[in-house]
Length: 217
Length: 217
Image (cartoon, rainbow over all chains, first blue to last red; front, top):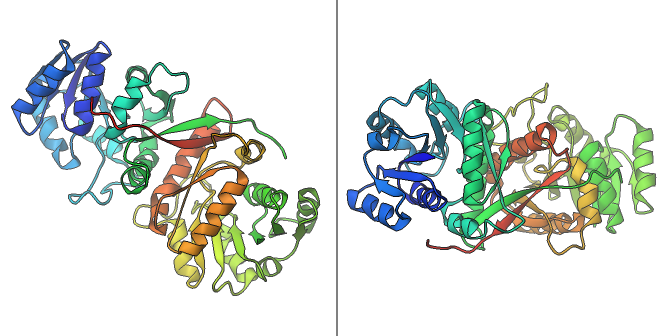
């Protein structure tokens, strides 16, 4: 697949690098400096390049939105018309001080994004784990037991694409239903962030949803 | 410990049964029928008995609140003065049709409960997993790798008590901080409920938060 990265920070930079190593064509865009984009592309290997958001979006099968919430409008404006595209978002609707969600309960960042972008096929994924865990999960992708990653969306084909990329990174995709479920997945991200950044074990945490037997007593 | 169960439905009935089997003295209270309470107590063994909410609260070291949100005021009124007690809540602030949270974002059910009960030491725990998984987790409690269970609260001693009970049931307790974190744990409960009741694998699901190595690339 051809993947455009909109926002090449901690999440976008690492996910794009993994996507490229997994065999996809990746264009990194929207970082503080073009030099950083070039370095990311160089380190990610021959399938990666650096460009503008518009270049990242052109001909992309799928886009990853990984910017700070305050940057969403700007990067989407720069990317141009995204009609018909699959847009995977891990951008959380955080306030300016990064301490709380600005959209929650009756809606979610992903739902607000879908409203704003209309004909774009939005999937919410990759938000629920910290960037610090990504390379290790990818390194261990051949192990039998993988960590889970929840994702949700309203378009079936877009969800299939997202599930494939989730697998490529080394997670077991867990379909939690329609995009509306992002209103629960985004607070879950806040909980995982608390474990990662305030817990005792360090930031590289992931989760696994496990099936048990139902016993009556 | 002496544990009073306020609300002996699916969660309260099963958790009380497990607490009793794990060696605690348990009083079941607040069910649709006294007959059901008696049966629960009989099946949970010699350490369990049935009573009123007031009897469950008297001399209890810790109380488990496991009623439907619409019943919270009623059961607390029946229980009487709970000043100084540890109250573990898994009651979710659901609307009457059980389709959405009535309190979220800027607060949570657990925080609203703590405000209402004042001198009670509230801990939020056991909400994030479905009742269907409990007996199997307990049956497998001697396995090396246990599922996680997040809990939060503002009183240190109360959290120690909660962590012990979480371990007794067969989970690894994961302290996610102050009671305020319930505003993220409760939506996470909604997400787990979606996986349990709308997913393909059946309702007996739990989760494990796993530590990974932080790799730079």
